[in-house]
Image (cartoon, rainbow, N blue to C red; front, side, top):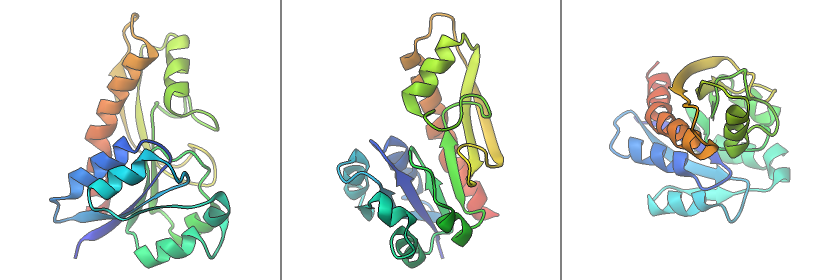
Length: 189
C-alpha cells in the first residue's frame, strides 16, 4: 500500500506541484491532500490540476482540535510536508504526528531562520550580508521556527554579482531536486 503525503503551503505552490508530480508515478507514496491557510492561494489550483484533493482553512481551524487536526486524522498521513507554509505549526498537530512533520527552508540553518525569514526575505538578507554560499535545509518541525533536527542540507555558491533573484532561482533548483527525494527516503525507512 502506498504511503500517504499531506502538504501544507501558503502561496503559489511550486514545491507542492513538484512533489505531486514526482510521486504521481511512484509505487512508494502519493500526495493525498494539499492544505493552505489562504483561500485564494495558487497552490489550490495547482493541486486540483493534478487531481489532488486541496482545501483551505482558517487560523482558528489550524489550532483547533476539531479543525485541521481532524482533517489530518481522516487523511492518515505517513508524512506531513511544509512546503512554503508561513504559519507557525501548532503543537496540537506535532503531538499527534510525532516525527512526521518536515519543512524546507531556503537557507543553511541556523543562519537566516526564524520568524519572518522566508522566501525573498531570506535571499535578500543573504545577498546583503555578502554570503558566498547558501542553500536549503530540510528539517523536522518542532515547536520553534526552523529549530527542528536537520535531515539534509545542500549548498549553492553565490557569485559577487548575484542578485536576490539569482539566489532564489539557484535555491529553488535545490528544493525541486532534493525535497521529493528526502520525502521518499523517509517513507522507505
